[in-house]
Length: 266
Image 1 (cartoon, rainbow, N blue to C red):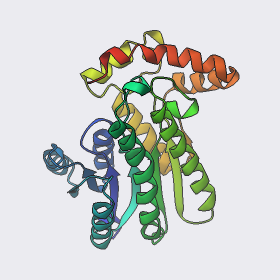
Image 2: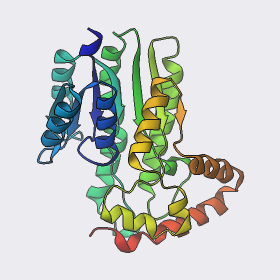
Image 3: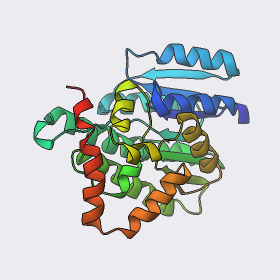
Image 4: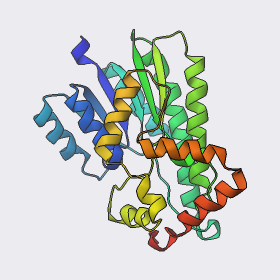
């Protein structure tokens, strides 16, 4: 029965979500991958399943659709004994707030904040049925300070941080452990890479290969660490930034992020 347990990963079609799926497969975990329709998730799942000999199921729907979310999660929990939830799906970007479409702002809030809270709430009773179970929520180093030219994104990640830590305390004494991961910048595609490199030394110092981030996040989550900051430079940066007054910190970070705007998709 132990081998028939499943890990549920949202946003699994690319980037950190895809790498988390690969690393979970290497550890022998069966998985249910949630992604938007029309992507390459089915091919990814098939390749992972063949290479690592694990079961990988794909469920494609938009996490911001309430009815689809409830229906699909009911189907997943009815078929698969999930003992590990990884809330990875998220979106962001850099732009002047006056040039950011209302739909973009709404989607960041719906996906990063609302869907994370709802999925977690719906999955907790199922997770508690296991003697030991885990939740990993993906926040960001951006959660530690407000940032101009992003504004909504770091606020959404600050929500995930606060939500996760409160949940960790609320579930203390149960077998369900909650961890929150704060990755630095991740070079997931050419556009993202250009944006990160445009920040100069500030951006490059925090870089860590995606497979390394995934390995650290999984290892420490399974060891029940509540707070996970992958990468020595990110931990040093967090410690140093905590010593700097907020107004100065805000200017330093925002100045670096402003350089990203030229690479933002229109």
